[in-house]
Length: 146
Image (cartoon, rainbow, N blue to C red):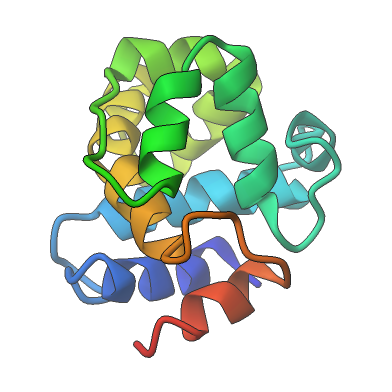
């Protein structure tokens, strides 16, 4: 699935519509697309070989970077804890963040800030049962009745 298609689905999930809106879906679509291996730079390996569902790999990356409490709060059913752009930049491989920034037409710092704004809500909506569902990311998003 192309990053733009993924961005449209995530944009719908986040309530911003596929085109326009906050842009959070598009930047997350680029990020998850890169983690699925669409970015050359070893994205699937960076996400733990996550294949069609990079969500678990992304959460692993964040957890290993010291963002355990935040990631768990987004998956769980309680209040979502915030994360900063600097924390996102530290957690993601530099080449992945650079690719996402390039696709979005922003600096890596701006991309990290946008991801930090959109990611908690997206993870929260993609994990309504309090755990990361199995299946492809596309199927998980479509299951949210967009």
